[in-house]
Image: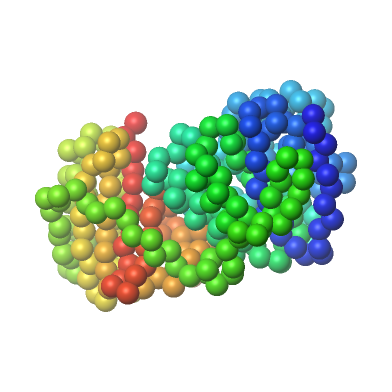
Length: 318
């Protein structure tokens, strides 16, 4: 295995680093030394990867595996917007930035849909904003170059400020600056299918929003639980449109493959790029709608432009 070269970290600094590897041997060759060094330094370590990699790490680490926390990315990162809250919980539970920490997180794999892949890249970029320099921890994000498209690897160079490649650590010269990350995502979403019906609603139309979404979910073959999830998420987003988006919005629903999609547009502007990724504070009236939508849906896409905001909810048919 290749030894991971230890890189000193600045006090109270978040080190977000992409690890490029090809296949399981290279994955273990980089991650096992990273983990064992953390264990030896008494640094809490959380590894969030898929189940086969967790099993491989358990075998490679031996007894040291019992000193490491593991979580399955297929559960934690089912919706990529739920990953930052999981890392926040890890940081908070281990001193809230007062001690060195280590993490390994692999949200991107070849099985992600095109839409989910875009949101995973956005998640990786937002990690730099969410933690900045106020947390002394080192997050290593593996990318399997043997199965990922070159464009995905190139994007990782833009979303991480450090790279670990060919056994060497180096700063990324491609990484986006703070202002670029802090701006709400404006990349346009794909258009709804031709002929998709739209429904304009206001404060008197929330019941009809829920009815319309339930009907679409039932026609698409969602089970009762998933229909309820989508209807509740749509209700929360539509309520936000009424409260913060000019008092009204436009709803469209359609089916794309195995996914039921609910698209809500309004004239408001969401300025916080981390919206929906911060756990709501008790007794605080705002910040719950998009958080809840992220908990209920496989994907929530938010785009902001001069014309307003679109929130697109995705629920999978299983």
